[in-house]
Length: 325
Image (cartoon, rainbow, N blue to C red; front, side):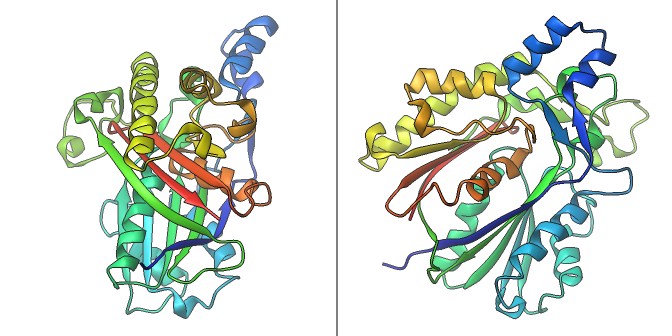
């Protein structure tokens, strides 16, 4: 049976650093409060784009790192996952194709998803290769949530960072490849208002209603959703694939914040040495968070290891898959 591989993962973060201690201090928090907040979420700082930098700019920067490792003429499909696109029209993937100098006889499309986006887009990429439609796919994630969070909204501002990742997915194995395994997905659109930018689409484009241009996040409901759905989804995935928790060497959850992720870890009884909580200097980078962890720990994720990926967030949606070397 044909296999599909992740052959390279790269990421790019803006140079500008925003310290959560400073944000909380401006919000009137004292030293004790600041420590409690930052310890709880596990995020000390985040990277933030400048005023004239957008999702496509970050996407180009991470993609160019990948193109140092492969002849760009071998890329025959471009998938761009973002929740903060530069444009509604045209498709941003088309703009990226041109600016990256990729050949014209390729497919290119946008996928609008938030924190579950990397797992979902991996599934699309695998399907394209298995169906013979592509051999080498450039999968890009990129978001700039900082542009959609009010300056005074410190509760959301201290969570989200900007960033982009690029992943090379191929039908042929490289030296340090991850084989992409099976997937399970979940969707609950009844919770869509728990993470929404209300005035970003055609429904409200010409509305006289003011406001709604910024992220509206219902933190308690997102926490409740994550603790219910993510353990269920992981257990469902393991059962479906005849695996046990002991068969998984590492768990890479979407890096939402440590309060959520450690709660999931406790529910599933995952040992500390098997899980990554590495959002301290990046924050929640939406669909980029899982591949950033993969890139930063490529040497640790050695041959023969089973790595379970779990993305979850806005939609509401969630996805689980297994990769291994």
